[in-house]
Image (tube, rainbow, N blue to C red; front, side):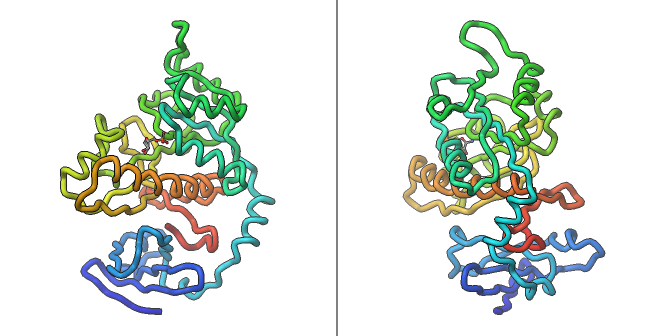
Length: 296
Ligand code: GRF
């Protein structure tokens, strides 16, 4: 175990055959171990952080705790945790939706996509859903002029016994009725490190152009809970992607999207396995699959 210190605080790295872990030294002790997580990470420059999974431990003592083998845990999760029903919202090509769908089919996600909601009936995501036999709901407007109210939408989604709602490139604001009907159950993915480059007007290539123009050296996807404001709900997960000196917006977008697919799958898997806990100040944390007392 190597110990490092930096202006941000102290941490240790633990090398195991599969992973590298970061153990935070708490800056202050408290009766609640969740409070101990209020400190910052810095990364040694020689670590390829974009490809590593960080394992934030609640206390130094837990560093030595035994790691449960993934296979044992997966079997026990499937035995104990009910398979979840997901609703996905898309407006575009739906590459995140397709990647999530594949993860439900191959067993990585302990859940099924029960319904797709879109405002664009001919978008790639909607076509893919129809092809896979997933029901498609048009919201907010149906082509023939009839309008699905927010209440109708809530009822329609409930009729599929949906546990969680996943937004994957849906460009319309989610109605308040839906947010209230599914508290702490709606996730969105945004292609920048929120709270930077988020909010109204920051979507698609505009996000990546703004990141490049700002001179930021890092970008990457953020997955957050959805509330009534664009891109302002609690952050659940992020992944860092470098911004290269000669990047075009398209090149940066492709690099970020690649990480979006990986991150969304991991986060939705955690959601379906009930591995999300809420810190006392309202910040959601993901419990590591290998050891539930480790958070990321
Ligand atoms: C992604 O970049 C996502 O971050 C944003 O919308 C885009 C959707 O892309 N919310 P795709 O339709 O999943 O390819």
